[in-house]
Amino acid sequence: MQTSRMLRKFLLAVLVSSSALLAQQPASSSPDPQVAGASSEKLSNDPAKVASLIGASYYHPDELGSLGCSVSVDWPAFFTAMKLTLPENRLKSIQGLKIQSRAIRNKIPDITFDWTGGPLDNAEQFESGIKQMISGYYQIYWPMVASSPLAGPSDLSRIDLLPDGGATTTSLSPNMTTITIDRWEPQHITQSTAQP
Amino acid sequence: MKATIDPHYAPSLNPVSGDLRRISSLDVKEQIGTSTINVRLSLDYQEVDGFNVPKHVSFDLLGAYSINMEFFNCKTTARTAP
Image 1 (cartoon, chains in turn brown, green):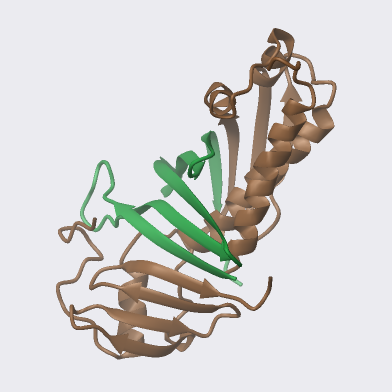
Image 2: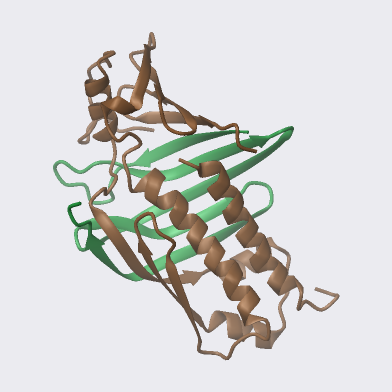
């Protein structure tokens, strides 16, 4: 998992998108144990058992291969948060923008644009920022939400049982990953990487 | 560099037998040198072709801004066996 890099990429994309807008701005401007996956038993230090419990503790659609969607962005909320006031014509263009994304698991998504309200003069720059933003989201979605955090027991190099019935596990992923779990699900994931 | 991720879970809005909880948010904290970035990614879900996939996605850079996206008219394909 390379969440750190994904996170920075996403943040950068949002800043690129907002920069594209600013360039045109006028100067004035807790777990429920009753559901499936929950287990009342304490964890053991059996890697197969721990990996199985982690895998069954929450929904992650490993069978999902691709996802294609229309995407809309709540621009008014974003502009308000960024303290931006857009000229009427730019706002109309942006609000008329239709975005389509097609994301294949672990690949760069294909994102297309249809400027139904007429394109911005710097549409290319704006599209580039949105592409990076949506791509950054999918780079978090596929490994963190749509996949089990462990491929299997062999991912676990160490299991330390905790007094409360949970455990801390350490995996052998490329970025050293530690997952703290209670009896039901991963609670805290720490990744350390030597890469700056 | 060190990143920590705290997942949070929520039950399905219409749970059926065997239904698993979903990740409802991820709190990500990244430390680079003396700087720390705190981000929360929040999700809710819709069912498409038997898969539960994100519908609303909110990305909050805490203390700075948030951006909200909606995914709709979705289509899915299942993974093919390798």
